[in-house]
Image (cartoon, rainbow, N blue to C red; front, side, top):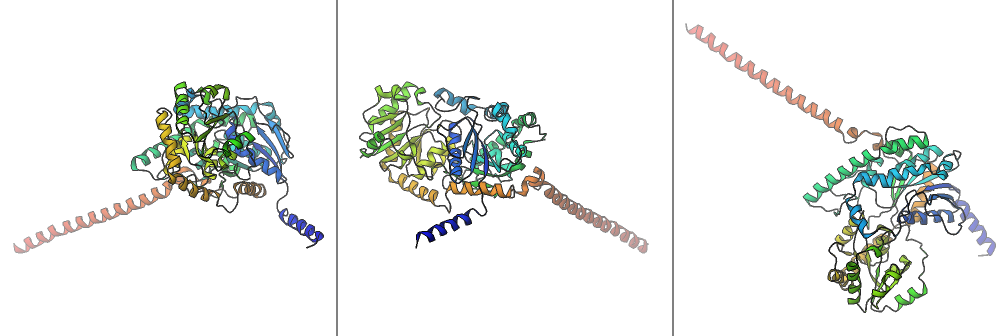
Length: 522
């Protein structure tokens, strides 16, 4: 085929591809100051720019280098960044935190940032400037109001699986009999007592969140000048929500069409490369290597010395297996055994891809564990707070991880857990099956997310369930069941009345016959 024909064919394909989708002007809002909450969204936003779309990004994490079609609207400095600064002493606080405090920290306080000058300026943007608005969904629902303010459809972005307090906003069923709460440690197949606890937990979470989120009504009125009677009204502007989950790693659940699973979108097409020293270390780890990190949030240097010593002694015991550890070298080097390399930052996906990495010691964060599953690395989980407990319990039940409690962890328990994962072939076999399911999709998560963002820009909220328009008593058919019960009671009442009447008639007739016979005998 000649060059001219190839150019003509290429041009024709581009014309067909762009016939229904033109370049979009997108506003993305990620107001929570947690780095882990931004990673997946950042990868998606960069991919959108490479597809020709223009993206304005509100976040605490502006890009170091300029990216074409990517414009930062930085709110850095408006609140403390949550990255590598959660200490050991914080864990108990996070685990015992009341829902009120959670909503205040992740919702109310985040909504207060609407008074920040760059966000105030953003509110003055002419309507119609943006084709679609992407809003992070966690607990700061006030930002959904940008949709009506700027007259653009809203796409939600969930950094984890769909939380209990969001199901109702989409008319999506949340059945406690087989759907564990976001805060539970149960698997989908529960005993009676687990189902009882799960039901009470979900009910408590939903009721409390609905109550405490009401404070955001006044914030919406204050910053947007919009009167609403409930937070539910804001979700009328949401076309769909992209959720960081997939059935292969999370729960099997029913979902309305506007809930789109894009679990692992930060993994696909990832171009991370290993630093030369790390590459050489892993290449030379002929007996295998264990990767050890507690993610971008937890500060391992804050752990008690006895606990750190248990880690070091355990790592020394598993030699000649090597350990690649993320942490501050200055705080650990003097105590580390020879088979351990420690670095302050490591390209995690690139590490997990390496053939000699045989196990992953993790806190159970969703992004990291998805990466491990994608690249078939079984885990030793030491969860601390949030959904980490749920994630690791799910993986343990699927036979791809061993869980340790940080409160009782010691040298022997950690060594036994590592050896179990390294030497028992069922863990690698199970995670290989899960990984195959994770990768086997008609479209990659990134392509799926981009398609639905473009879809929302074209069509708006056409996927919303009619259930969102019903009051709770209509949704659960209480009026229908009440009417049916009244009918049944009316029928029963009528039957009883008829039987009573017939009995009275029958009893009333017999005496008259006896009297008449008696009179005749006289």
